[in-house]
Length: 74
Image (cartoon, rainbow, N blue to C red; front, side, top):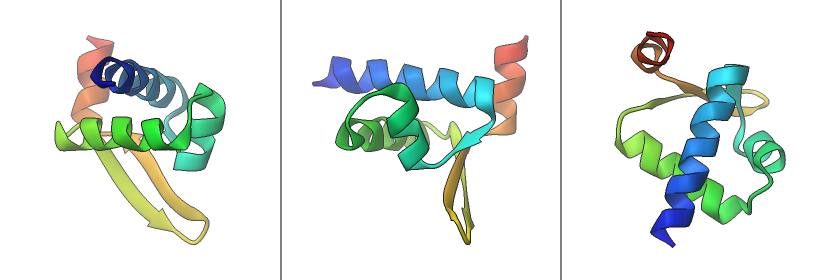
């Protein structure tokens, strides 16, 4: 189970790196994993301080923290 969550966390990371932002619904659809595992992966990344969340009228949007993007580009 932890391997699955870690693998999906990597997929979430790469999706956000390429697409800037997404909602949980969009991540679930685009990654092709079940919502429960995607939520656990988001929690994993959030606990590591790698994500930012912005609440909007359309929902909550998830992005990689700026320093994470800078590190990925280096």
